[in-house]
Image (cartoon, rainbow, N blue to C red; front, side):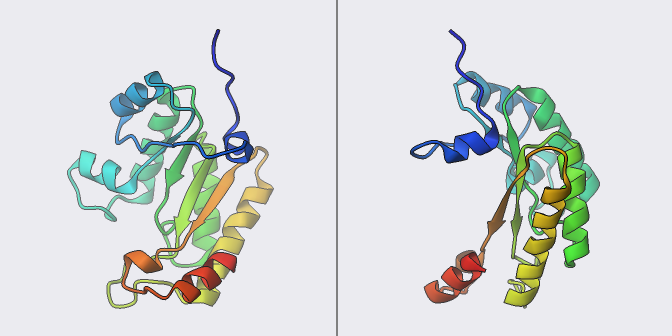
Length: 170
């Protein structure tokens, strides 16, 4: 008997946790699907490394091509690591969500990491505006799209747990 294919949102809503692996390419996506995983998530680092370039240097167009390839590789729902959404403004994140959904993705994550070593995390107000724009883009889609807002403080030298909680709640 073939296992039930759940939507990406249903996987999140079921009791307990589910494991979502990060394939780097079509081959590893197919291997992971064959092992029985119920969904896949792209990895910005893995994608870049598979292309032979540093993380954070793959442009939006190449990332969307990669997303389209990953979606086509299996019948599983795929969520994408879209880093900071390929721009600093709420408008750029809005457009990225629309373009990402058009590839067939089931969802994505957007980070509050700026890519700037001197100021690695967006100010809270801008980070919140960016996620609000992403949410607005999701609401305008004709299909369900799961958005994950990521707080990167602990990865970039901002260890205040209170600030992390405040950002996550915002």
